[in-house]
Length: 187
Image (cartoon, rainbow, N blue to C red; front, side, top):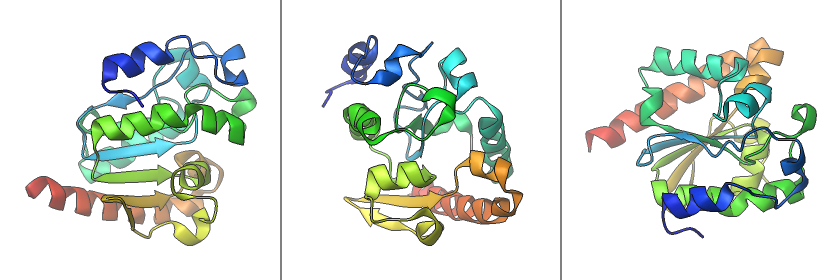
């Protein structure tokens, strides 16, 4: 584990812990408020993210930004990251060894940020954070508390681009998150 952001950022600069390093343009560590009470974890960078070195800047990110605006959430006040920090080829699901290679980075991010709420975007985030026994279809929309953190599993925004019927559930889940987030911010 890394004790501070400088240590974490320095350690990941030339990461070669897995084969994803072979084709990356940029490592995408994360973006946002490093003291955020609300954190979003997705699967991995896509092509746009790999080019820009920032999470959720492609079509899925634009959809997230729309949701943030609709909910009155300032993207700069939350922290956004992914399970893996380098783009999987052809945007495939990260393999288990790739996810494990990045897990210390992610754990350190969570430890340093100390969020109260983490939104798990999609099955890959859910299974890698809470365990393989969880399924996104049965878990989404339900609060799960572990070690003092509230988790809300929901659809990954990329899934909404493939299946528009999921947008209603995604919106409902994020409204629940916004409500809880506002309650925590008032305290």
